[in-house]
Length: 176
Image (tube, rainbow, N blue to C red):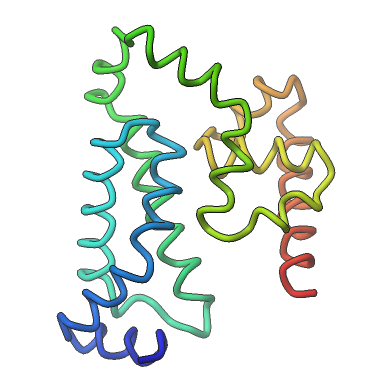
């Protein structure tokens, strides 16, 4: 069954179609969420919340506005960012274990490994280094543009412009 027909059936409240869409998209959606929250249990919890939102808001999706996969990933990214900005999440992270930092140091290629989760590694690799960094910080790590400006030591306006340029370049690469 094609994803378009599955989406239509899900919008008609067909649970089997929804289950199939979950099978198709859950792994890559989990990858995006995990990239932001950096905790498997929390990522699994957010993943479930995301798919509940997808089910509850299925009728708000329109293929004329964009791809289903993009719609799902936007929901996932926003949910993951909401989670890390929550007071509960921040309180849990105050006392991080040393293993957390060891994993970060050992995982030098985390961005390139994780971008392959959603199948865009070859496109991201073609971008200039600054674009890779901007996309990683804003979309895979969940930074706000203001926080990214501080992290990249750039004016906020420059980050916004660079983000727009980089996303447009990525879009061009994906349609070539």
